[in-house]
Structure formats: structure tokens, C-alpha cells
Length: 91
Ligand SMILES: [Zn+2]
Image (cartoon, rainbow, N blue to C red; front, side):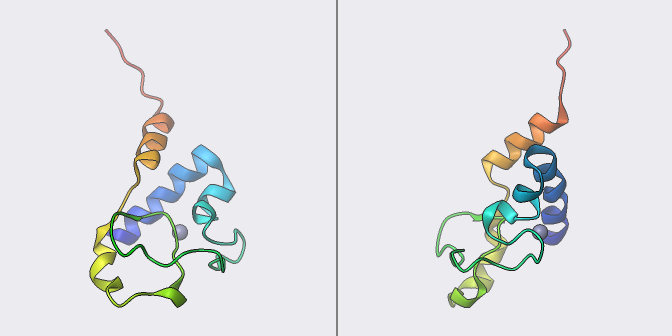
């Protein structure tokens, strides 16, 4: 389910911001090779995990696997989805 949500999220990010946002996983990976940048941080120890970012696997903390299920779409990406839907309101 997380993979499906992530892959769908690519279409939202592509529409809203193009390749660098989508294929670049919001700046966390290189666009072409999809490799995680050395500057990319590890998974956050607490708080939300951005569904559309990659995290540095070399900096994985012990509680990663318990926390992956905490991955969620960020508010900005939900706004991008709504913006991209081009909803028109009728009276
Ligand atoms: Zn991806």
C-alpha cells in the first residue's frame, strides 16, 4: 500500500513541479540514477515520515522498521494534489 501511494505521488509531484520534484524525490535523490544524496538525512526518529522522500539508508536507526508505517503524505503534497485536480466549484 505504501509503494502504491508513493508511485501515485510521483504523478502528483510531476504535475506540480516536474522532474526534480518527482524523480528527485523532493531533493533527496539524484534525478537520473535515483541514488540517495549523501546530504539526505536518515529517517526521522519521531514525527511524520515523508512518503515521497528517500532517506539515507546508511544512517538507519534501530527503530526504522517500526516507523516505516508512519509514512504519510505531507500537507504540501495534499495541496499539490488538490491544486492539480483543478476542481471547479459550481453553485
Ligand atoms: Zn519514488
